[in-house]
Amino acid sequence: MMKFDQILHNRKSTRSFHSTPVKEKDVTAIIEAARIAPSACNSQTWRFVTVIQKEIIRKICHEAMRPVVPNKWLEQAPLVIVGCSQLDIVANRIGGRITGIEYYQIDLGIAMEHIVLKATELGLGTCWIGWFDERRLKKILKIPKRIKVPALLAVGYPKDDSSRKRKRKPIEKIVFSEKWGQPFTPFSLV
Ligand SMILES: Cc1cc2nc3c(=O)[nH]c(=O)nc-3n(C[C@H](O)[C@H](O)[C@H](O)COP(=O)(O)O)c2cc1C
Image 1 (cartoon, rainbow, N blue to C red):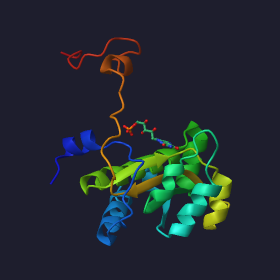
Image 2: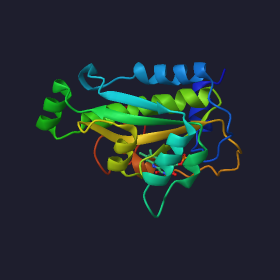
Image 3: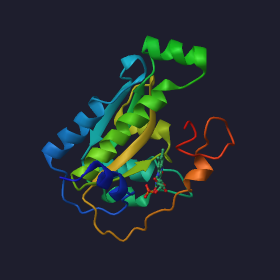
Image 4: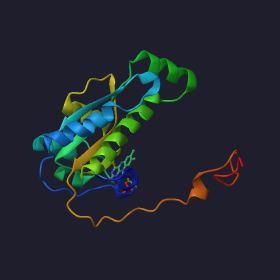
């Protein structure tokens, strides 16, 4: 079994998939990883639609993507997980109104990344998709108006491993110690 650190380091966005369907037990396992995720006030605002029917995935790809980055590769994905948010959950909505923080987006982001990491452990590739037309997508999948769809995930067995590892900023650019702008040192309290 992959160690957690390997899972973190092995994960990268996959945009080329084998047509092999994702095993039922793997679908169950990745959804379970989302189900146990934390959420603000434990409000569990996330909802998911799993799509495996080729013609629906094709429709999503042809009708619900956006120009410039049309995510054409999505058509080959054997599984698309549509990340939805239920906005009418009181604790989440009132809390968000007071603080100005969209907790449902944080909730869904965590749950979907749980899916991504569990999928990586199972040898599946994933790619987040945030560049799509929400209105058109909701129409295709008959998702009610009150539901928000912030992101999708393409899931499948990766076809090739040639996609490059994308660079990350160095620690000192993204972390400060004690106060904003102060260089990060893990020992600043010592
Ligand atoms: C919220 C979100 C939305 C994204 N939307 C898209 C997308 O629409 N199309 C795409 O090809 N990649 C998309 N990505 C993938 C990012 O481009 C990718 O994670 C980033 O370049 C880092 O590369 P890596 O995932 O291989 O480490 C998205 C990622 C996130 C987290």
